[in-house]
Amino acid sequence: MDNDMLEVKKQPTYYEEVIRKGYDRRDFMKFASMMAAFIGLEKSAIGQVAKAMETKSRIPIIWLHFQECTCCSESFIRSSHPMVADILLDMVSLDYTETLMAASGAQAEKSLKDTMKKYKGEYILCVEGSVPVAADGVYCMIGGKTSMHILEEAAADAKAIIAWGSCASNGCVQSAKPNPTQATPIHKLITGKPIIKVPGCPPIGEVMAGVIVHLLTFGTIPELDRVGRPKAFYSKRVHDSCYRRPYFDAGLFVETFDDENAKKGYCLYKVGCKGPSTYNACGVMKWNGGVSYPIQSGHGCIGCSEENFWDNGRLYERASAFAGFGIESDADTIGKVALGATLVAVAGHAVATNIGKQKSIHDLETEGKASEHELPS
Amino acid sequence: MDNKYLRLPRLRRVYVWELPVRFYHWLNAVVILALIATGFYINNPLALMSQKEATQVYTMGWVRYVHFAAAYLFFFNFLFRIYWGFVGNKYANWKQFIPTSKRFFTEMWNVFKIDILMLKKDGKEQHHISIGHNAMAGFIYFLTFIAFAVQCLTGFGLYADMGGWWFPRMFAWVPSMFGGDMLTRTIHHWTMWFFILFAVVHVYLVFYHDYVEGRGEISSMGGGWKFIEEEVFEEKKYHTPNPRKKH
Image (cartoon, rainbow over all chains, first blue to last red; front, side, top):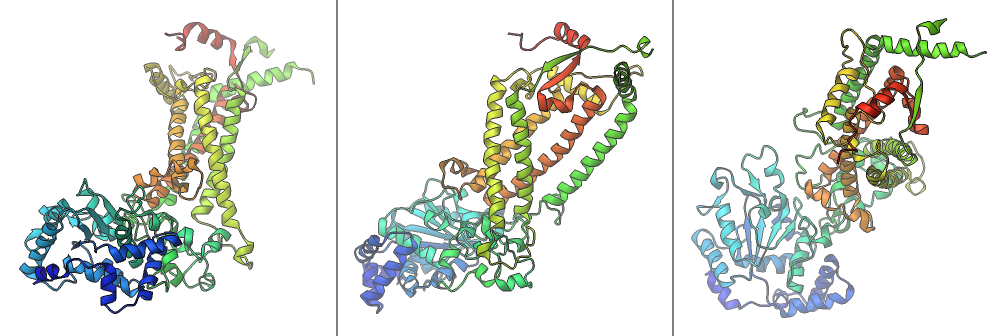
């Protein structure tokens, strides 16, 4: 049945789909403008986005879910503009996505196979979740196959891969120490395919939509940074676009969450905000249709889009704990102990010098004094 | 009267630390102090009791500015010192720092026995006289150079995305190597403690050498001169194989 639906549709364009769903052209143009702005294009490119959506047929997408919590999908369908969910995800889901497709069981498996065959080398493979590789991958199996097996199959003929969220980009919480399932991000398993990482737990819905619109408009991978994230969204720290930044520069900080400074909206740096080491667009795009984001709600950034954010120290302090030194030890505690030990050692050596080098010191003094006596006063 | 048994040695003056080396040393000392102080502040800023609006205060901004400016001075000063290790006098040469011969290790062992453990030989106190760095000191300085490099790499790596200039941007690969800014920052912070511990031991040992040898160790970083007993001078001149003469 799924297969029949695909045959009948014959790849409508996004615009056709928009109109069919009851939006008018004005809505469509708003959507195109918003997307152009999000992916960092100039005004003249709005037409380009609109044109691409009018003329190009939709990109076939296979969306796989592995070891994850589906927060990426949740974030995506909640992106501010209803068209994002209506158009991008609805049409995406036609091909294959476990959470939202109608088909189930053998039919679903068939649908996946058919899509892979029909759009060989054309489809975009979206992966949500990490792949557990421990114990031959038994920790995440779908339809009797391990996630690794499914991933390899689907990746073989994909045009490109999008790693949605921190799980697929860097392992996220599942890969936190001791990582019992050996949760592994996609880029460590698949080579030879372009991989776009869209980290975040979850990533911002508009960012996800922006990546797809970019693929559609230009037919190319967006410009990526060294780590493989789209530069349009991940080139700046949350700190760099934070509306509380003036308090940081001034040196005015929240000391505890219930103090006067917190009420005044001072910088959350001292209560562990990871904004200064987190690359994301939260400060600019915000969440839930631009309503707010963690820092605006009075809570520091936890750095969810950064690799190892879970293991890299405590969420409410600047200092980071170190494995092997006890949970409460941080660099400064160990540093102070080392400094104390050094001072004790130095003092001990100084005392020992006065005993061990007694004669040398005495000789020098005698020699110096003799010279002094020789000279007239 | 005392002269009957006291033999006053004649001291030879040796120009050990050239002006560029002294300049490097003191600039380095000042910027490291500034970097440590501002670094601590950046890590854990003081609670400012200010009634002013944020627009009128720029405390953290200034502290960070000093940190970054000092970092640039530190980096180029360090580069200059490496250069001077190839063109400076024999006491500034890179071979003073990197163990390249068995003699280097033998001397390190001697320094360890004589200056750290203060072992005596046949009940007599021993002296290890070196004119420039002794081998142990030289090797420790080599470790500090590695720490310098770590600080420059991690520091400019963290700074890379803030700066518009191509120079810090060259270091952008460093945080991605460590999987992000968090770990890079931690490494930067940890290495700073090495500098503090080094400074304590360094200052102590300068006093120690001046105290037990009386050869102007402390003032040598001012004027560049060290003093050596005539007989030790002669002995070093004729009996110690000079590595520079070997071809």
